Amino acid sequence: MVNLEIEFCGVKFPNPFILASGVLGVTGKSFQRVIELGAGGVTTKSLWKNPHPGHKNPTMFGTESYFMNAVGLSDGGIEKAVEELGEYLPTRKAPLIANIVGGKAEEFRDMAQAIEEMSVKPDMIEVNISCPNVEDEFGKPFACETVTASAVTKLVREATKLPIIVKLSPNVSNIGQIAKSVEAAGADGITAINTIGPGMRWNIDLKTPILANKVGGVSGPAIFPIAVKAVYDIAQVVKIPIIATGGITSGKDALEIMMAGGSLCGVGTAIYYRGDEFWKEAINEMSNWLDKEGIKNLSEIVGVFHKK
Ligand SMILES: Cc1cc2nc3c(=O)[nH]c(=O)nc-3n(C[C@H](O)[C@H](O)[C@H](O)COP(=O)(O)O)c2cc1C
Image (cartoon, rainbow, N blue to C red; front, side, top):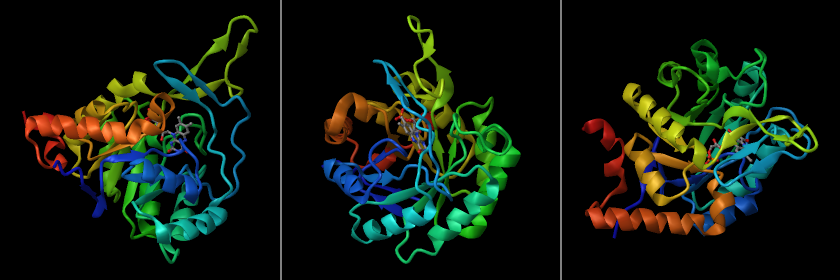
């Protein structure tokens, strides 16, 4: 039997496949369902300090190689989230990562504080500084500059003892540099990557953009090579672990991006392609390959491309 267990920032995950932020339902019931289907953990959609409306429909567009979304991070606010998560967390069967987002740096700190005060807390906090279709106070994601990325990380670090994982954007010239800056500011881990772009598609007959928001973040198989490179570049320069995310659609994709430096694998758009079966199938694909290679513990493969 192959052991797929992964320890990440002191938290044990039964397997490396975790639900990426924002992709499936957000209630306790849907988290429980994803775990029953085989996920090793779940991430909430991005939570805001105050209720946030999100963008108008249509918000999603998919092709066989990529999806574009402009959900706009709609949310009922941190108070409601704390209440809902408070009901779910005591009975959870696998780790839960609470993802937070803000338009101003201080909002991240306030939300981390609200989570820190919960009687049963999430296992870690993911800090989303990288959504490509939501503008922050500077008109671009905090993840685009070392100064802003590390400032947000520091504020969250001061507000909580929970592990904090900072989610980075691929839309930068040197993602390793940003990763180093958030590591120095106190991050315990990094998620890479958020969606790419934003991108844009049009209906040529109607001469209208396909998404109501005109632009949307690009995800799915087409971005996998960019995710592998981002994870590889980050793993070269930091010591903290990485949640590899972006276009993972199979057990073999997961093995490849883990060998590039990922410890866990965030999975989002693959669910639209492979459905509920994804989790068990990907686990089997991974186990079969490891078994064939005679590898007993999945953790042995993390970062092996760097050891050559
Ligand atoms: C419909 C949709 C909603 C998303 N919502 C969020 C979100 O709320 N917060 C966040 O940090 N990332 C969000 N993402 C980004 C994903 O978590 C992930 O980083 C990205 O889609 C790349 O992974 P994938 O190709 O496996 O989907 C969303 C992605 C999609 C497709």
